Image 1 (cartoon, rainbow, N blue to C red):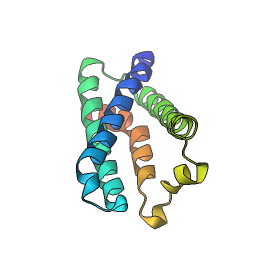
Image 2 (cartoon, rainbow, N blue to C red):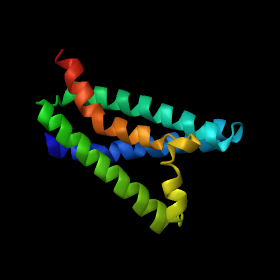
Image 3 (cartoon, rainbow, N blue to C red):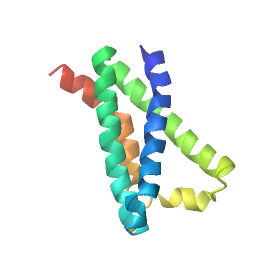
Length: 129
């Protein structure tokens, strides 16, 4: 089951890219960069939550431990992708990539990372309540 969920991360990556594309093509043109970043983080959280919930209906997570392992793997895969793609493919500087982690500046990307880590457990727990 864990292998399926690790492969499913690729679908979550597509959802995240679609979310960013939506931001750039629509509301990102009309909002400040900070507001667009915050809204995009919120929509990313909602979209990934919905997609994970649907997946869980077809492939239920077996235990709390399995949920936490999936979440930890998704966190690592997301951070590796973000920094690897962002720096080596998109050409962003390390300081620019790290700026999204500055909560004091209103950058809330780290909340998405917390969510991607806990969403398997939240989904498992909610379905077993």
